[in-house]
Length: 265
Image (cartoon, rainbow, N blue to C red; front, side, top):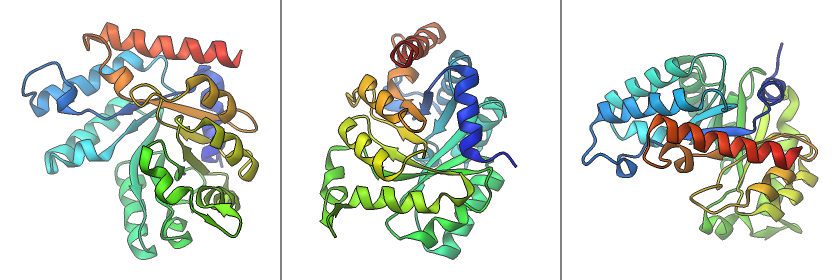
């Protein structure tokens, strides 16, 4: 059986790309005035078509689909169909609930929608994570040290000599029995990536925060791919690049990947 973390490593090696394209298709970022749902659906397909050559993974953020109700869920299904099976998909759902509820979320995200991996919140402990890591072919990225400014409010609190994000990293390393557990660490805190690697060597990292949030691409990519692999997520910086034409989006994705290849040699 090909475990998710191995699948991810293989995808990165084949494409020589560490780019995850975040699909946060926000109507407020569109050039059209008062874009319709059809406009958003067409733009999503445009982003996928323009970046397919460079994307190692796509990460639809469920919030931007859920806001449209049942039509949004249909749009999400169409999006995943358009991506196809050749590129990994990460459902940015940030789920985290008690065991029997978590099981239903896992069935929804993995079995119905068909995501290859999902993002999870670890606050409720192991029973909120277990249902998502039973199938080695399906992966999770667990929130560890996030890119938002207020992440420090809880994640940097100390207990038993460790900050909370260090404890999360250490605990998640212990959950990786099926080689399908990874962590979310922000590019806005590259020094913490080095620390997390000490607690969770080998676990893949999903690194958001490059682009609009001003994260350090070189530092986070280098640290993330030391003793493990890392995906750099870029959302607005690609999906809404330039004049939002397919060419502008294609060039933005290409530029990011070429920089990454230069950094990693």
